[in-house]
Image (tube, rainbow, N blue to C red; front, side, top):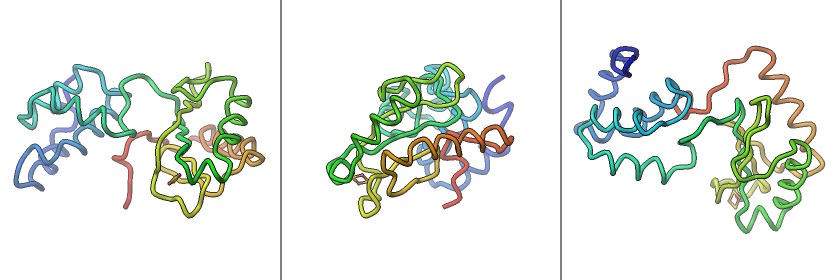
Amino acid sequence: MALRDIHGAEIDTLLARYAQRRSAVLPLLYIAQDTYGHLTDDAVREVAEIIGMPATDVFEVVGFYSLYYTKPMGKWVLQVCDDVPCCFCGAEELITALEQALGLRAHGETTRDGMFTLERVKCVAACNKAPVLQANLDYIYNLTADKADELLNELRRRADSGEQLSVSGRAATV
Ligand code: FES
C-alpha cells in the first residue's frame, strides 16, 4: 500500500504547512521510515513524487542525516558520538564496552535478536555533557563505559514493557 493510502490526511496536513511542497521533505521521510521500517529506494522515490522533487535530491537528503536509515535497524538505534570532546571524556571506552556487551562492531551492526543497532556518529550538539549516546530520540548524557550494562538493561526493559519505540524523528516532541 502506498504512503498516500495509509497516511493521506497526515500528508495533506503537512503539505499545507509549507509554502513549497519540497519543504516537507524531512517529515515525509520520517513518515516513510515509520511505515516501511527503513527507507528503501522505492520509499525515497515515493516521497520525491509526492513533493515533486528529483529523486536524486531526496536520496542526498537521506544520505546527509544520521536519523534516516536505508537498511533494517534494531528497535533501539544506539548512536555514540565519537567527536573530539566526547572522545576526551571516554567515548572510545564506551564504544568498546558496548561492542563487547552486544557482541558486535559499531559500524551499524545489529544484534541477532533485533534489539540494538550500534553506530558511531559525529557531534550531536551536547558536548557539555560528554560522552553522549543517542538511543532513538533519547539523549543519554555523561555516559561512561562503566554505565553501559546498566543502560542496555534499562533499554531492554523498556522495549519488553511494550513501550512504543520509534527510530523516527516523527515522534519528536520538540
Ligand atoms: S562532541 Fe560529542 S556531542 Fe559534541
